[in-house]
Image (cartoon, rainbow, N blue to C red):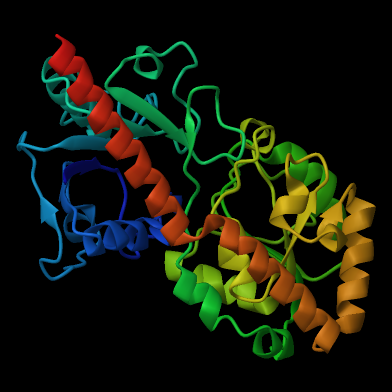
Length: 350
């Protein structure tokens, strides 16, 4: 089918001073859809070319109009005051929200085009009309999505899992006991409980946008780094802590940080109060406090480079199969086909 795909981000490395977790999984996801015979047209601007100066060689189609499509797929955008709620053309304005509104008004409301909303940031209101419209479906990257929504996780390519060699990763020298790559957004509570106490005792590094750090003077914040540099931080780190905003932790919505870390051989420690923690990591890596983090780090230092270390990495790689790319593409295709059939039936009855 021909899918109109709306996303606000990058397919390549993008630019450093811009948050976009989708860079870790968006392009493999799209390439897999193309490989299955779907036609995809991107409906937001080509930010790789316009902002990052990255020419993707004409591999993808962008259209700033309203082309004919069979289905609309939206990576859901939300209002960010001072950024996408301002007047078009004003300083600092981004037009992602205005463009999304145009797409929804034309395709979803007027043409009743089958529409799938991927609410990756859990910002679509529970009472949203799009959760109860016959020709729309909502997907969430959670193991326990909102009732009525479908579980569509952030995907990781199976070939990356196959290429991960636990013995080689365990043998890599690591000068950091603890590393983290990601932004501060709504993570102060788990940072206070798990990361900061351990950081007072071990070599560590935090990369990303952390603007309010006065309460942690002992923590080494490196600021934002290029997207492709994340693997380097994790490649130096023995372990990381999986820190989720509460709205993610409560429903088992894991971010791409888990596979960025694991594929670099960095072991992820998961807070026990994170829903489905034991599905994301082996039980040996579930922690309940900052002192637990220190205890696990001490143990990991003792076994670093051994077969026991490699076995833990292997167990973490195996857990990533939950996010397998083929499985997530199957999910989206199932949602799309079911939606198209339901829409056709509804139109026939009318």
